[in-house]
Image (cartoon, rainbow, N blue to C red; front, side, top):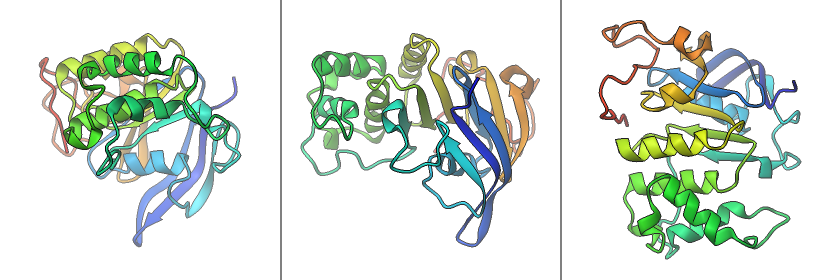
Amino acid sequence: MSALATAAHVDVNLAGNRILEDIDLTIRPGQRVGILGANGSGKSTLIKALLGLVPLAKGEVELFGQTPGRQLPWAKLAYVPQTSAVGAGVPTSALEVVRAGLLTGRRPWPPKGSKTRALAALAAVGLEDIARQAVAQLSGGQRHRVLLARALVRDPELLIMDEPLAGVDAASAERLVQALERRGQMTCLVVLHDLGPFERYLRRGIVLSHGRIVADGPLAEVLPTDHHHHHEDPRPRRSRTPELEVRP
């Protein structure tokens, strides 16, 4: 089975600091992988390194067998960053932003049926009622969910999300995971601090601590066995109540 994403001996230095050190990983088709760890452990930087968004000090990465660049089959990939200025100051509706997820370099306008697909993607994240509302008028959490919908509407082969539960209430988080479950064998790589409903969805966990991978295996094996471990433990907490604890 060929790999969708790989990193080999990757180091990343930012602002003179070593953020990632000697990262080796392989993501294969159909895997549901959580990138886990404490704040500041390098989780987001790892995602950006795989996407070619930060320079590598050492090593190499590949997506779909290619070094990230223009030749990459971007239509097969969807990325949801942790923060975005999408729609800021622009009178663009949530529906229009999500439909734009169907555009590619070879397809400069949304395909037939794009409105229906976009509305379904908004419903998947609990935003069907604000489809016509300007994104600039939405809260930060709602804008983040619009980005999630824009990624889902693409039906990508590889979905990469950075803290998708930030600013998302418990009911919407559940709907998001249900939407992912309906997409069958889609490969998913997601950065998380608190697992929430992703605990049942993910199958593999990669745990980072101080920029290094300290655990990689079945999710249940890399999670803590109790709910009272020290706050410096790099592993994520299991959900203890139906309420989501949202971290900045």
